[in-house]
Image (cartoon, rainbow, N blue to C red; front, side):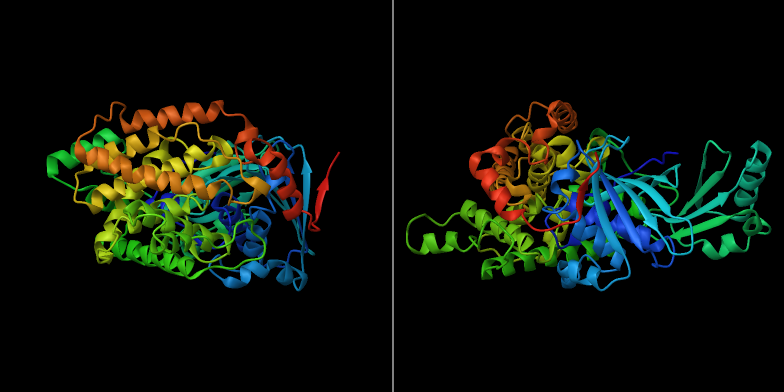
Length: 534
């Protein structure tokens, strides 16, 4: 069973608001844990998590926060809660344990979680889930049934034991007759058991409970509420699905890129214009606060780099460097990354590994200009819709496509946002995004000591300044040559050609230099529950 996924600006591109080193690892794991917690009263006693030997999680689940995120979700700790950093203490005081095993699993995805949840007085729950980048995830198996659960719908799962074709038709007819505004998916196992998934934009649990005869036929029920920032609507009438369609609409109706972003997100989520603007402005304030906090200086024991964002201003005051927009972008990008590395509150844009790019470029470009919240909100919306096309066609997961899909995507988004901030057209914004992304193709992901710090900081700074230069070139009328949609396709082909050692495993590039190996030993010698299944 496979449902069609339509990216959302708030779910897939700008966000989540979170703490932790990695959205692919930390936020996605947290959301998976939150779904498990919803699957019944949290009385589980043991959670066994298996990672594939050849996947990314086998080497990075501790250093990049998968263990933190999953435990936080299972414990009911929010990603914004400072206490999530102390997850190990909370686990010690809980009624369950988590065990990690590195083995061979059949589902060959670099970010695959095979999880068994054991309860004291009922059958265990077995799920197979994948992290797909930027905090997005998908549960693809639920107790051996094929499913597609992404946390953006209200979902009711109903199990019917040993049914035939006539039974299935009757069940489907009964549900269709008594419900509206929903999508229904069916999955049958080899024994003839049927799992029905009912997806809706609002809760239908009471309506389902009152359907005559349905509860008696169902042997097991699970009700899941959305864990994503905005729920999906059952039926979407999108204003465009391709870059060309969007630009044609912009030309015909003289719309800015942020206008188009609002149109899209409204159709995608059902939110009205004022709600979309307000939500984005709240996110913008979180990012501004990250910059302010970073520039004050951050402290955290378990990181490679200390606070450096203040060094730019110090060097300017000493006359070592001249004050420029580029300098400010470097300082602001660094500040955001340092707040991330100290487990402060940040926004993944589009990922935690690239969280400094868009905020650093947009706020840094203001220099001495007064900050306008509404204008900045629209710039981030323009950046968001630019990222939607990447999410639709490929991924933000460095485990699949290298750093080009994280900081490269961030550069494209920031370039488009800078055009919006400077009053440029939607066409100019997309051309700037294309130029920026062209400059990042082939960028590998080789985090030292599996920490999202080195060379991640430098790559964020490079992407943010690349965005500034690309926006200048687009406004000046430079020839983009390759259209944005073709550049995304090229990025996908490059990503598929990259070896797994250069896709966030810590098994290649700078991570495998002598210094990189020494840092790995220094930062990863702590006790853990890791086991290797031979």
